Amino acid sequence: MKNHIRLGVNVDHVATLRQVRGGTTPYPSVLDMVRKSVKGGAEQITIHLREDRRHIQLHDLVLLSKKCPVDLNLEMAATDDMVRLARKYKPEWVCLVPEKRAELTTEGGLNVAKGFRKMKPMVEKMQMRGIEISMFIEPSLEQVEASYKIGADAVEFHTGHWVLLKGAKKEKEWQRLVNAAHLAHASGLRVHAGHGLDYHHAKLIRKLPYLQEVNIGHSLVCYALEDGLEASVRKMKKVLKGS
Ligand code: PXP
Image (cartoon, rainbow, N blue to C red; front, side, top):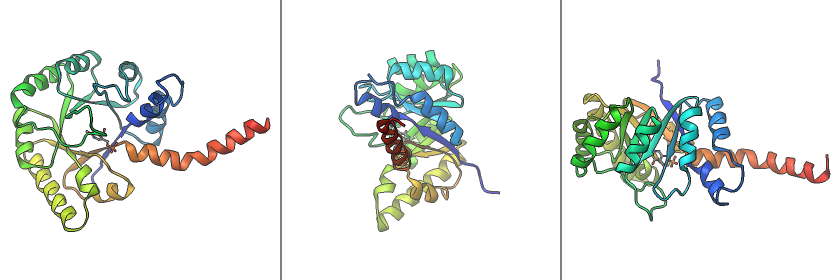
């Protein structure tokens, strides 16, 4: 039997579209899109509450902490403010990510080895509330080892660089992912992956040893537009015709 890979759907960019108009429109509704994702088979919903609040807002976290029908995975920076919010709203999972204000998206993995002393008590504080913790890291043996030592439950490998690379460089990055996955599994950590995954790379990532979960956002929201715009235009034409 093939191993089951859990799908976490990241709905950040549903909120991006809403926030483009300053959050003044009732659409798109993050909760409706969460429900549709779950209907489609999402086993987890992932949101990133960024410090600059560029997409997901605090009210989204508050609502989803009550109404999300599947596990909620909160991506967040390792700050005292975010740890306080996580302990208050208790998502099933927290994924600790690095955060830079100027970046377009999460550009690299967390340096767990460097931030170890600051992050260890944060990890413990959240786990004491029953929250499971994953560390969003580059597929490096050093970072896997630090994630194990810090007491994380899982590592999520940043697949963004691998997705963009080509040829021999892509093969080399894949080998790094494979080696890191072996070490994570041997250390008792769950193996997750995410960033930049589209249909093509989702097919390839299935071959990563011990992979238990992927978190996918941007491509899914883009595919939803590609698959859905024609029907929406057709509906608008009908409205304009008064039919
Ligand atoms: N996993 C983590 C930790 C992320 O930061 C992101 C992006 O917010 C994703 C997964 C999803 O990446 P994408 O939107 O490129 O699918």
